[in-house]
Amino acid sequence: MSRLAPTFAALKKQKRAALIPYVMAGDPQPWVAVPLLHALVDAGADVIELGVPFSDPMADGPVIQHAAERSLKHNVTLTRVLEIVREFRAKDSTTPIVLMGYLNPFEAMGYQAFAEQAASAGVDGVLTVDLPPEEAEPFASTLHACGLDPIFLLAPTSGPDRIRRIAAVARGYLYYVSLRGVTGASHLDVNEVSRRLKTIRRHTHLPLGVGFGINSPETAAAVAAIADAVVVGSAIVSRIAANADAPERVLGEVPAFVRSLRAAMDQARAPRAASGASA
Image (cartoon, rainbow, N blue to C red):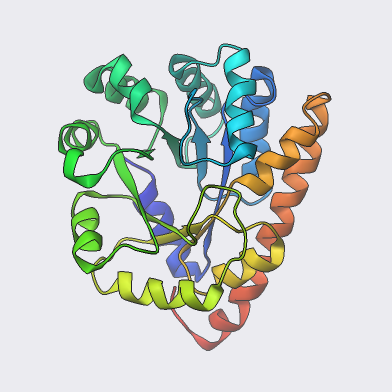
């Protein structure tokens, strides 16, 4: 059974927003992967999105594209990604892990084989960037049967019908892309995001995470005040890239940045908690 629903329920009671860092599996070196996941949890991560390397990551900007290239150079396949999750689970049985990637590797392994192996390894959800809801039923139903949550993206241009269609097949949480463009884009408009989240909440009871354009404690805090989860990817991966030639430094600098995000987010929610506002 997925750990996502209990995690979000506990955070809602605590009136806290989930912090969801994204890292590419095996970047910058495969040996860094498991220690980094544990360090992220220690720094305050509530859920982790673990990227599955792919050679043609069409929705990603150059920062995450280069991360995929570094991982692929070290032969980090989908099978190796599942091994990383399994190794992580030897010491952490509670933090949800969501695989984020593209459909091709899952198709190549086979939906049933992938879902069974992912569930056995300890994966909780799968976010498939290039899988539209109209074509999702075979994969989503296979994930459901194995206790995994299919997670979907919502765009700034998603209308009510599209939101309802996606919400009907999704589980775990919905990932709202806060701006147009690829990962790593900027110019986050928090007021516009707030308006969009209010619209989306009319059509779903799933937790709403917000990602793209969150690159500092300040922007993380602003989004934490209005969303159920804050997803941070390129800002983390860029710090990994800066230390690619000295991977041991990744285990210090990246958790330090995540810890700063967590502190800012908790501070943003503190007045709401004091007044009894709900998540």
